[in-house]
Length: 65
Image (cartoon, rainbow, N blue to C red; front, side, top):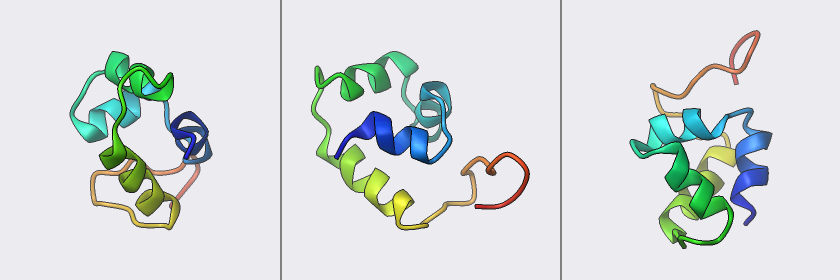
């Protein structure tokens, strides 16, 4: 899975994803560039792409997901 493409498909910035995952934008950048492998984040992004949304997930601009 391409994490950067999945993040963009969800309409999130690196900072927003980092905030949700309680990490830093720099860590997200490393994951997206393949410097830091994270199968957990790949599984999580697959869940989000399947329309799973926790309560703290940012709303899509202009409404709901």
